[in-house]
Amino acid sequence: MMKHIHLTEDMETLAAYIGNTLSDDEKQQIEEHLADCDECRKFFVLTNEILKDEEVPEWEPADGKKAEEILNKIKEKTDLIKPVEVFCQWIKASLSDLASCVWFSCFESQAALSAVRSFSAEKGTTIDYLYLKKNIHDLETEMYIRKMEDHKADLKIRISKQGVKVGNIRLTLKGEGMRDVSRPLRDEYVLFEKLSFGNYDLILIQRGTEAKQEYHFTFKLDETGIQEQYE
Image 1: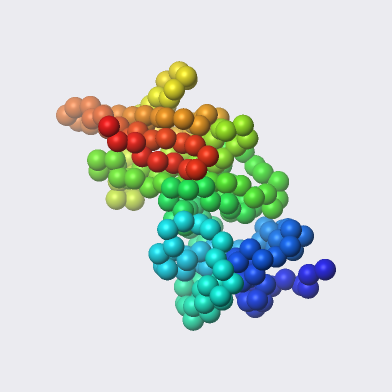
Image 2: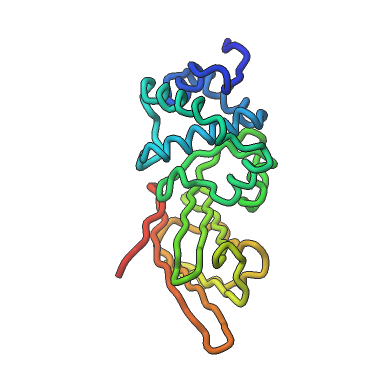
């Protein structure tokens, strides 16, 4: 049985978890602990920020030596550790700078991710996510995609300009074998549910004082992640 877990102090265990060298039972204990402990979950996310700083192109297991180096750097950067409430805001606003185009497994807690999902999950559930941030013309477009069963996904889209929510926007999603779905951006996000893997065209229609503006973003969603499509 694994000893009492406190990942901010037990560097060896966290390095083994990142290095993917723990047993299935030990990994399950770590994941259950991360679902319950705000401090360790915050520390785990900070680890991934350091991974990003190291210019790792994808989210994938690091070897033990690399994990140790990363964790030692984290200890040297304690000024970067954010309080829990800031951490929750960070994970809701930029869920996956860690993986811009590939699926990223996230420990989904009831509180931290409630604003970026369409329904609640059991405590400690590991969910695959995508996050893509794209400037479509001058509109900052953030896409949060939650992987579902049977090759489907839920998609939430947030539109802003210089950090401020944009009004008078309608989002239309066109996909293979589906009816066009068109919704106005009334709240913080627009939600498209149970999308099958395939090719999509996202159309942003903005009505201004002078004329209607229409912008397109074409992408493919599949088992490997999300890829922008170019004509």
